[in-house]
Figure 1 (cartoon, rainbow, N blue to C red):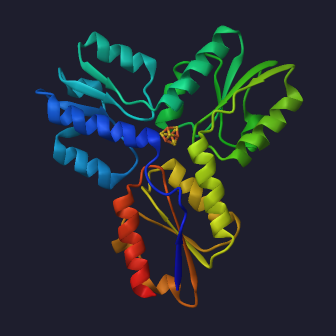
Figure 2 (cartoon, helix red, strand yellow; figure 1 turned 90 degrees about the horizontal axis):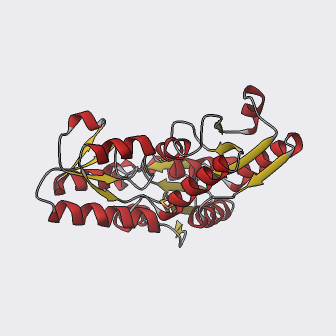
Figure 3 (cartoon, rainbow, N blue to C red; figure 1 turned 60 degrees about the vertical axis):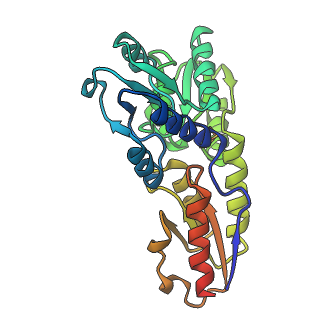
Length: 278
Ligand code: SF4
């Protein structure tokens, strides 16, 4: 069996930066160091951070002092303000590309546009962007949801950074037909687009795809969806130990991709185990 790995696999810039900032904070701060929710959507890396002294809290009420590391997805401005009022030391590890989406959303609101975010309503990145977008904000996960929301005539569109190009284009296409005025910022992260294209291309050439990443990671799940759209049998694994040899019966070509928060070390372990079957 041959194993091919997309060359884009591994931590993206924003996740690498957030992880480094968190490890540095854990090593240098004297008081408690914590994140509101997991720093990134990779349970193995989050476990390493906990070992290094970065705890995960779910509410600022759980702490009185210390260092808050803002995760790569960013934070709702009200929560950030609350952290400042509490006098917490803040290390802002928000990915600069996510910050850019927040700035665009705020500018659109200022210019009188109804902000439309193309993304997953419950995702922490979208929650942070919502906080910058004003009261008329609408979040659309797919084109079918357009009928269920109240839209004005002046729409300002941004995207969650890990959206697929296809979903973004489909929704923008529909909205363009109904609005009088529309301003669009395609804020899908380039690293995400490139990784998705490479994954889709590989999925079309192999018999089976293995996608490595956190089950709670939106961008990892999107890669799985893309592979399945071209009907390639696809499995999501977080670690090498989850691979089942039965998946490869009658398969000759294996493709491997990975989410933006999956370290090279975990990808290498997966590839090593796959090559052991060859
Ligand atoms: S995928 Fe892009 S936007 Fe998201 S954290 Fe990585 S570099 Fe930043």
